[in-house]
Structures are given as structure tokens and as C-alpha cells.
Image (cartoon, rainbow, N blue to C red; front, top):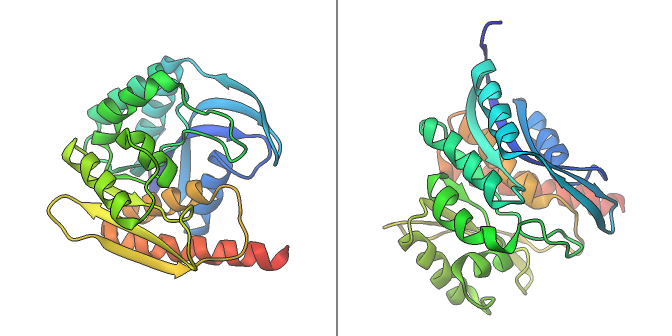
Length: 254
């Protein structure tokens, strides 16, 4: 079968049976931007809107085979990575990225579910830091994930978060988008960090409500814009606005 020429985003991540996060949210977001999605499922979760009750991880070789098949079948313009679960899956995904360095990857470093269930083995964090995220065009941690990746306590202010981000850049990351959704204050500010460049802030009013899957949506939207040829800064700006509007509409319906 011939290669499908329209741009695709390859989504690598876990399924969420509640339909609010994971690959469901990724596909929904990418489709809203008029791009197609291909998939490599890493894990199957059993969860409701309140809790995760089961996690079943796929074999690392199967994850890598899905990625290679998707890349062979489609014109993949970007890769979005979410839940990886184990050290072995991280290594398998990293191997595929090394074989395809021309394709930008965006990783949302999923560590814990909204309900507090661990989604990545504790021993896998160092492998994630050293083997995978340096291969990615952008990493999108929230403040909790940032602290874990930096090996530090939770930052209490923006200066602390910037110091943690700079520590990760020195360790080899290409670019970092620090998400401010867990910070205090009436504004939600995300900060784009790149080596040897000034931080760029993306600011929006803090909405009085929440929605699961916003991290998935943001990273997927950025990947979609990169697949369409956008510069990183432009892709982040458009994606921040998209997620803000989606959250605003969700809150107004509730």
C-alpha cells in the first residue's frame, strides 16, 4: 500500500477508558486541527473520571513495532509521546526516535494520574531523563513533573521553576515548556525555555475550574502545529490558546 502523503502525528501513549485523557484526547485535539493521527499504544488503563483501577502495559517490542509500522505507512510530521509506564518501553521508544531524528517529538512526561495513581515506574525516571527526553524537540512538564525531573523540591515561585528548567537544559534537553497550571495566582503562565535564549512567557487568565487531559491536549496541539511546519514558539502560542478556549467552554457547560 502506498504511503499516505497527508501530514500525520504519531501518538505514542496509553488508553484511558473514561475517554478524558491519553490517546483519546490526543486524537480529538489533532483532528480539531485538521490533521490525521496514527498510533502506538503503550498501555491500557482501566479508569473512571475519579480513579485508575488497573494498568496493563504492552510489550516494549510491540510498542516499537507499532511505531515503525505507523512511520512506514504515513507521512509523519511529528511525534507526540505521553504515558510510557516502564523503563523498557522508554528504551524501545528512544530507539525508534534515534532512527528517525528528522521528525520532531513532543513529550508530555506523564508521571502520575489526576487521581494520584503512579503512571511511570519510579526506577524509570532516570532512563526517561537520560535516554529519551534529550531526543525530543520539546518537553512539557507541569511544576510537579519539573521538580521530579530536576531531582528537586517543588518550586515555590517562578525563579525556582526557571532554575530547575535551566538545570535540565544543561543536562541536554533541547527545549522545555514549563506549564503553570499548578501555580498560584490569577494568571496561568507557561514558560518556554531554550538554551542560550531568553524565556518566552505565554499568559492567560486562570479559569475557575479544571478538565482532565489538558496536558495531553497541549502537547498534541503543539505536535500538530510542528507537523504543519510551524515554528516552535508559534506552535506553543496557538496551542495554549486552543487549550484555554477548550477549558473555558468546558467550564461554561458545567
